[in-house]
Length: 198
View 1 (tube, rainbow, N blue to C red):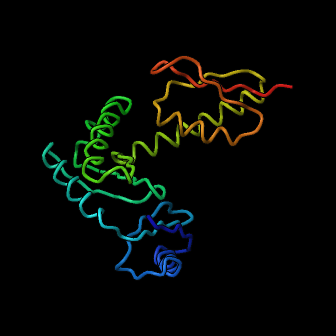
View 2: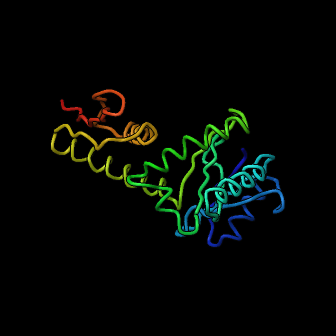
């Protein structure tokens, strides 16, 4: 998937600049506003499966008794982020602590693997819940790592699922002065932030 992130004073300028970089016309692309201040827009070329994915999701959510706005954009070159804002069923589909959303993710990934093959990976979200939770978990983990360095103490992070664990490890591995250890197995696995005390 080919895409460009562009920062500008207006959405229109950002899209125009991205079109030049992608060597594309406005009819060949879609875009999503990633940030409002400063304005950052992700512009990506349309691809064959995009309309099929949207059509399937519209049918799927109508069958479970709702519909809503679907936003799809590349998270990386091989991963699509799909956010669905439903009409009145967001809380039900997210569930307590995101459990229902986690199970919905698993189900939709299985269906999409059969329909579209293994070449694309998917992240499904409901009303941006997953993105907000990721941001919260990363910020909390970074704050905990800073405490570990400052106090020269180990801190155990709250339980995380596999996906969240990968994100937190990815962010914390870039920090100096700490290392990450895993304690426990399976669902009981926890991450421990250990300061590199000399």
